[in-house]
Length: 214
Image (cartoon, rainbow, N blue to C red; front, side):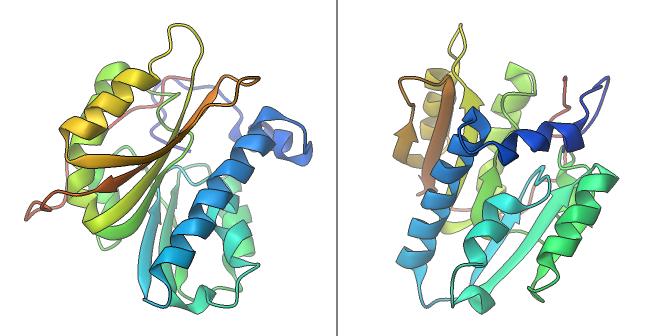
């Protein structure tokens, strides 16, 4: 996933919850894939660039592209640190020549070199595993990752104290307009999508963004 610090989570085992269609993780995945599909419909037939931070095995994006006839217009870079997930993502992405899986620390701005600015930025599974200060730092850096009008999709649990209202405020303060926020009543998950409406800075972020704490 991301920059490790003192993290001990087995991220390959963590992905096993996707095998249960009723799990919260699977339901979150369906929301995210729905948002990606809607975005692809809106941007068709234009060529688009995607970057995914802490991409895991890549199923957020690859699961959508596999069922579309226009996947060849998508260029993507998936950033993942765990070598087992990298291997799985590369195997899954083999059918898509324009999708690269980069074994890199997504918590470092330099890891995004050549992959940004993008039209879709996926920050899925990031904000629930990093400090509040790192969330803010990452959101402040996102304009440098975005093309004009780019969409950012992010996730964060809503366990007490629910931090998602603050995250949404930080997006607004950095020239993002909220397009949707999904918060199912029976799950402590939040999935947001925000469109960048500002002017991209001249330089892409190169600084430290975040360190995983779990």
